[in-house]
Amino acid sequence: MSTLRREATLALAIARKDARAELRGRHAAVGALFFSAVVLLLFGFALGPDAARLAAAAPGLLWLALIFAGTLAVSRLHLLETDDGALDQLALYPVPRRAIYAGKALGGFAIMLVLGLVVLGAVGILFAVDVGGALLPLLATVVLGTIGIAAVGTFYAGLTVRLRAREVMLPLLMLPVLAPLLLAAVKATSAALGGDPFGELGAWLQLLAAFDVIMVAAGAATYGYLLED
Amino acid sequence: MPQTTIYVSPRSLGAPDQRPPAVVTVDLARLFAGNAALAGVSLTVEAGRAVALLGPNGAGKTTLLRLLATAIRSSFGTARIDGLDLDRDAALVRARVAYLSHDTGLYDDLTARENLDFAATMLGTPDRRVRVARALADMGLSDRADDRVRGFSAGMRKRVALGRILLGQASLVLLDEPTAALDDEGVGLVAQLMAAWRDVGVTVLVASHSTDRLEPHLDARVTLDRGLVSDVDGMGVISTPVGVPAERRVVVATR
Image (cartoon, rainbow over all chains, first blue to last red; front, side):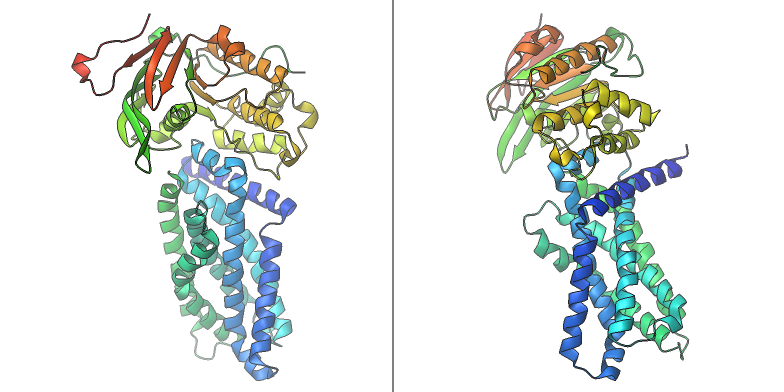
């Protein structure tokens, strides 16, 4: 079996294990989903009943809700590894560290993608935005954006999972790094919803893709050090 | 009931005297917050031997096992497993070492079978499903194989963790208090495992406070005290005092 194929098998096994535990324990997805719903509702209350104002703010609210909920989801997904020393055991398997990172990030991405699609639908309903009119570019934005959140989140969740103050440290470390992603994703979403009159959507999607490539590569190269004592 | 012959390895490791020493440590030390949990241990264990690590709480038994398992890095000193450097060749060492720690490393929301199936994938075990079923049977867990481990007792969890070791191809097995939480039958299982590992030439280091039932399967006993080797008794183990230059090392206890 080629090295790449073996690593892909390992990463899929880790992601499948996380998905199975998640479906049974519902540690990450349900909590993150309710959290994002609460964030959207509270922002809605804060902005008032003005429909035009809500629609204009919708792209920003969508991505803030997703990033906040993503912090929660990746954290909960890593907490699975604190079951009776599971992370230590995972580190002792004779497998490449980047395969472990890829597996954890893939599990995070799967949850974030589901979350992204649900929150996108919720934004469409709550803020009266025509999501259906620009479905393909919005889907591309959600896919690229959630890859970035999962890639960054997996790294920082691995960094903080052993800390006592992990709930505080994770957002403190993760959110500033996600600032470029937030900017690009909000701009791409705005462009998609507005019919892309200035033809800028492609550039923002390219920026999102570049962010993803850099963060996945950096995470894969450095995650192994986080597993060391 | 467990089967009479436990399937521990698909391969023979070769005659122990044809292999390099399973473990060679030189002045191995580990500090935690400035305190030496291991203060400089120089130990050589011949391949295929079963060695008990004895000593009071805080003597350094667990730290030594964790270092050899690559779970933690040393502060000073060097160690080799089957001739491979513990720091430089950590990835290769991991393929040769199996470690049973105090924690079982199991996922609570997965069943015993799913936990072992995941381990088998990570270990690259051939014939995964058959081997997992066999390990579960050997550990006397066939009846509970499809129950989530969240509901398992401490002893049952330990059996699943022992079953995980059976899925790899380790030439060195490190056991930290393997009989803790096990019932009489479980302790018998560990003794059976020790015998089976000896048959195929696997080296075993076992840290335990009660080695009575394992005694027939042991070649040597190494006693640690405050992070140093205080006594060695038995065959196949050499210990030298800390800080002695290599060319002047004298075997202080072996026979």
